[in-house]
Length: 135
Image (cartoon, rainbow, N blue to C red):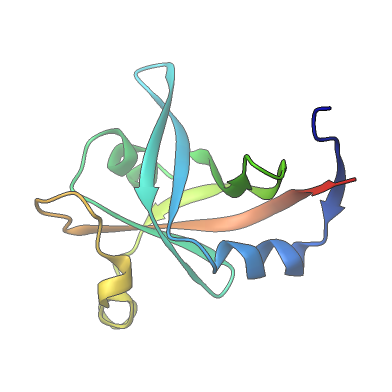
């Protein structure tokens, strides 16, 4: 018999707590009028999602202050349980030197080799989440 699960909405505080337990998520943005989703390393700083990048579409979205979506999750396929959190907010390039220094710790470094000179902050304007629990 297949596993059955039920879904429960999460409160914003629960969503932020869960986001702090993982380090990889997905950033969704528009690049040349097309939707794009990139896996990214991230951290949470207060109520902001922080991503370091080398450039490209992610950087363009931040420089232009565009609305982006961000999603992170953790799923156990054996038990059909887990959670997913989705953030909507405007991306911006972090330019304040004091904040850049505060954010320059190893947890914010991308896993991909290469330069990641730019720090993007997503100001969380909406955060929603779901927890999937086995019955």
